[in-house]
Amino acid sequence: MSDLPQPPRLLKPSLSTPYHIDYEWWGRVDREWRVYLLSHLCGDHRTSLEAVEAGEMIDWVEEDTGEVRQVDGVQHALITHCAKQPEYLTPHTSLVDAVFRVFLANGNSPLTLNELAERTGRPASTILRTLGGARVYKGLRPISE
Image: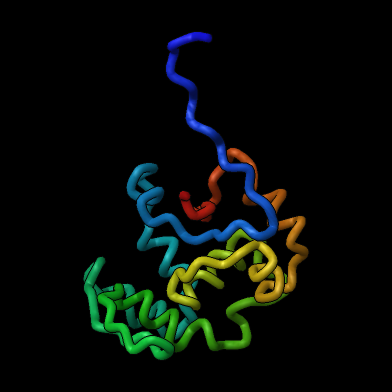
């Protein structure tokens, strides 16, 4: 046996693997988070929130738990209004954007690919083929164990 360090084990996702938006990924790859986030707002909020200071935080109370969290003002608009509009998720929304929007709407609570399939109307196997590979789309990643 060799004393060489072993490479880290890669996570092989399954349909029951929980996923989320990995916000740290956005920082590591130096993507423009705010621009992408604004693209998911409804027309009214996109216009009114473009001038809001990036990262401006507001208190948000989680309805189910009563937990108070600091959230970005743009995220708050997404969760409380835009995600409830009929055009938020349509059959024409790309798969990656649809999954991303589901996480925005649920406050980034982890969901399995089966749960994502129910919420997006897309087959879980298709979501797995898209998100389960080596490429990371928009920070959509399995929860690290």
